[in-house]
Structure formats: structure tokens, C-alpha cells
Image 1: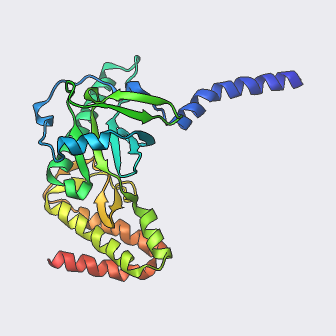
Image 2: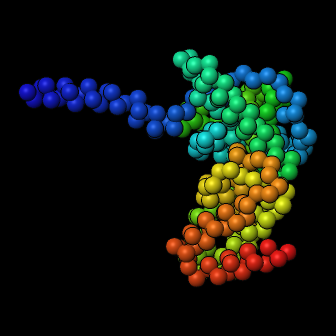
Length: 271
């Protein structure tokens, strides 16, 4: 009986290994970053960075940071930038319908990225887009995967975004609050409301309702780090929707700052 129990435990452990391994590696695979899409002239945009600035950023190694809904994210060695490689979920056994839906999702992400880059790069910190394959215009990038493996990626073959790295939204606010830095706390609230006002006035809407996943602070200024669900909508209500979520968070964590947020909303609505 004891041997049977040990055997069953062994079989169960083996069956759980693929699931545990996938969670540990975040399902990271280089093949998920490689897919065929037709060349699209609309995806070619004018560069913000000079070639020298771009080469300087890409001359350093990048380490795996996390996985988003549409991309794998790597952080630069100097911790100033992130590079987001578009990813997909296709497999050899995917149906034709699923592959079509995956490509449509990637195309929507490309369109959202172009909106962020061309209309709101200051609000998002986006510095560079590479949405079409190129020929030997970009270097090989040295990256480290989630398990410590080292890879050399020919960037000409990948679709990716380079963005300034920001502090997580909640982390920055709590640090300012617990440090009793009232000036910084007030500035963070001001900056967040002004960011939303600026972006919404440009007719851009973020259909992802997440507060903490979407926003962060760069050099003490609020930016929108996740723009994968940007759409053009001149009548969007994001200023109201996101400040409502922010008010709820303040009420729970720093209730004395709720009146200040309400005043900033009033001032910016009057303007």
C-alpha cells in the first residue's frame, strides 16, 4: 500500500510539472515572438530618436521583467528603458479561426501603439516602434530570459516597442505617503489628473480599465505605461472613469487626500 501511495504521488507530481514550469517561466518562448504578418506601410512611422540614441540604448543587455497581455517585457541594464516584444499564442494545433483572431489582436495592438507613439508619446514614454521586419538596420540585442538563459536576438526580425521605464503607480504613491512627503504626494495627484486630461483631449481612450497596470510615474510625472488598448474616441469619459477608480483607492489607503483629488478634478474640468 505504501509503495502504491508513493507511486501515485510520483505520477501526480509528474503530471503537474508542465503546469508549474509554465507558471515559473511565464510561458516564455522565443517562438511566440516570431510570427508572419504582411508588410504594412501604415506601420512605418517617423523616428523620434536619432540613430545614435537608439544604438546607445540597444548596446546594453536587457533582462526579462514580466509578461503582459500582448508582449514580453525586458528591462535595460541601466533600468531606464523597457523593450516590449509582441507575442502570440499560436501553436501547431491552433485552428485557422484562432490564428486569424490572434493576428487581428496583434494588428489592434500595432494600431494602438501607433496612436501612443504619434499622438501621445509624452504621455506614454514611447520612444521607438518597430512594427515591420527590416533588413540589417538594427543590431542584435543580448537578452536574458526568465530562467537565466542568454539569447542574441536579431531585432530586424521582431516587432517591438522601446519605452521609458516608470515606477509602478501604487508603489510610488505609497512610498510618498509613508515618507510623509506631502509635496510629492500632491504633485503625483496633480500629474495624474493632468495626464488624463491631456490624453483625453487628444481624443484617445484606453478601453482597459485597470488603474495600476496602466499607469506609473517617470521622473515624478505620471505616464500611461500600458497603451495596448488605445482607441480614438473624442467623446471618451476616461478622465471621470480613472479618477473615480483613483478616488476609491485613496479612500481606502490615504483618505485624507480625497478632497485634494476632488479639487484637482474640479480645477481641470473648469479649464
